[in-house]
Amino acid sequence: MLDIASMRGSLAEAYDLAPSVEAAEATRDIHARMDRVVPFADWARYAPYVIAINRLKAERNAVILAHNYMTPEIFHGVADVVGDSLQLAIKATEVEADVIVQCGVHFMAETSKILNPAKTVLIPDMEAGCSLAESITAAGIAEMRAKYPGAPVVSYVNTTAEVKAASDICCTSSNAAQIVAAMEGDTVIMTPDQYLAQNVAKMVPQKNVVWWEGSCIVHEQFTPQDLRDFRKFNPETRIIAHPECPPDVVAEADFSGSTSGIIDYVHKHQPKSAMLVTECSMASNIADELPGVDFVGPCMMCPYMKKITLEKILWSLHTMSQEVVVDLEVAAKARIAVQRMIDLSRKIAG
Image (tube, rainbow, N blue to C red):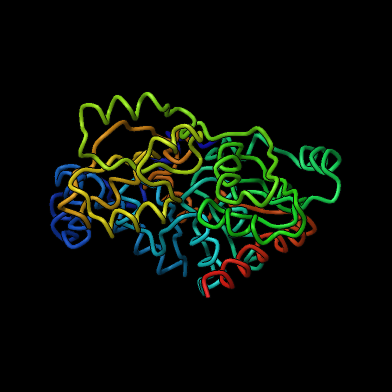
């Protein structure tokens, strides 16, 4: 666990991190990307960290990969690559930097390390875990294989390296249906997200999709009644749900898609009002790109994603600490499952 007091003391000795209007003015071009959701007064607090991190990235030959659920000051302020799990996994194979700083949760950092065994991979907070990833183990995979002999195992990328190594192929919410459809045999095992599996089963009726009963603590909180109540008082609002939501929630939505799919949908249709049934920061990060869209509705934050802060990113780069290490044998097996996903996704896209 990070010693926050000690960390802050050390950073204060090395950098001028006091709120600064001068620093905020000097980085107005960056702030312009999030002006709608981050007041300039708040930016004066963030700007000194952003300046320090961006300078340190150059010194360390580091690149920051940030998930769509990161807060705007990270997403727009210091990230070099942003996207959903699939986009980040693909980009992780293409970066030339010596150091990767993964701004997301632990399984994402493991994936980057699996794909880049020779690079240093850092995560700003080791406690940035994932309830979904923690719901399945390699023993759980073995249990499913025994129950459904011969069935291929498709594991969500939201899993540990150990689980990936025990699986045949990985998937993300953006390619799950296509990957399941491409599997041989009538029965396909999906782990660990029961709701993603159930939603995929409806999209791929030619397969008998069976699943492990895991779920995301953010997406499982939404209910169909939430959406019906909101639509009753806001009938013009377009409701867009992530497929990690329960099927009855997805059924109430106007559209369901992965994080990248949600972003593409809103850009294409640009409704006057949109409710994104997913993690809060999704809407915040695209608000300035879409000034004509009013983002409304409930806010569900991922407590694990929010463990990543500018302060912790700076500390990780400053000390080169919080390094993610994956056992070489486990990594080699997991790499096969992740690379199969990337290769099949590229084949499908092409």
